[in-house]
Length: 295
Length: 243
Image 1 (cartoon, rainbow over the protein chains, first blue to last red):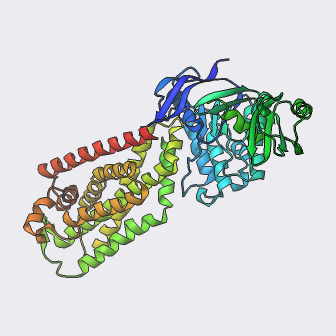
Image 2: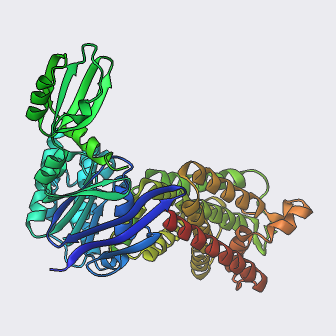
Image 3: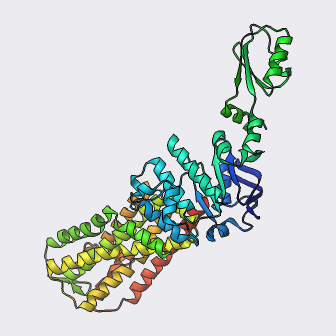
């Protein structure tokens, strides 16, 4: 199978800010890939270039072996951008029918509405939809043409919890049919649950790339915390398994890949300590550790 | 492209403000402006009542056509135009459809004001001349549609709407659409005949009198059309580049 997406050494700056910095990313056809990164990591800029909305300062961007604009013109791409709105004075069904008319091989209307969970809302005016419903309408518009590549930039931003679940179910059905899906998110849980492959982006570069499990292992570990009881902090970073040391007042927090070894060594060291606590690192914490690791 | 045209046409027809601005406002303006004073004279080669009918019809048409600026500006900022660029619909066709729809907004105004003129002041023209008046007042809006697109693609919504309104209001007053050019001060008359609005109305006045457009009028209108086309193209290109 050919590659759906290929970014090679792609860079893009806005003034002095390098939003995307020599980014390499290849996505094979049929993959479901999450682009994971904090706000400002360069995800949206990378997606904009992938869709031909803006050109890179340097490097090459290809979709299905051709220029992005060509792939878009050929109807191979559907996209849902973060802040791309819909318009007043039209219904959900009319919006879907418009998308169907623009693409060469669209899906049946009923199936589009069902996939996006909009069957009941088909005749509702777009300006009368809630934030989450509007987002689903934009999802319907993006997938109506049955594009081989579906790109979603933070698709669940305006959705509540139950809508979110419905949305991901719909996305899964779409990717299960052999389509390539790329979505950007800043939630590790979403990336892990719904993507075959997670690409972590920070400061415009890929900092990790693997399955959800691999990324979690990379960002995993526990926090060992205790009161210093007056002892100095020197040597704490030398304990086995410790990756980072943080001291707040009299309390030290050690991030550790092997909390058992860390605690055992702490006890053996003969230092004073009190109120020892071992906790699993929150995914968000772990993720922050990963994205800020490389300077 | 046709499905996009229909989609946009339906949205346009459902816009409640459109009827107010393009039908009620021009008709009320016509009734007020022609209700005072003597309407028995003649100007621009036709009766005063006929000239006013054509002038106010043109004024209504211009309002409607220029309103495309506010719409495009809103859709640009909301991201809708960007969403369309991610479909196989060529971006240039989006602009063309917007422009063509803008000119169509002229037709209800022209029909409404002509009908009012016929009823209120018994403005009577042979059917062929009525047809010619409607046709030139429709096709003559092309430069204003281009100006509206230039405004919509370059200015944010909060500024695009007042800018369109101010532009069309100045063009209407100084162009002699609401009051005959003959009553304007002499210095303003020289400006008036150089304006696209005046030459646009002139198309209608000549058609009502059964004459072909003047060479000078055609040249002035063509010049403005070219200028607005260049502005619209530049504004479009800039907006596509930055987003």
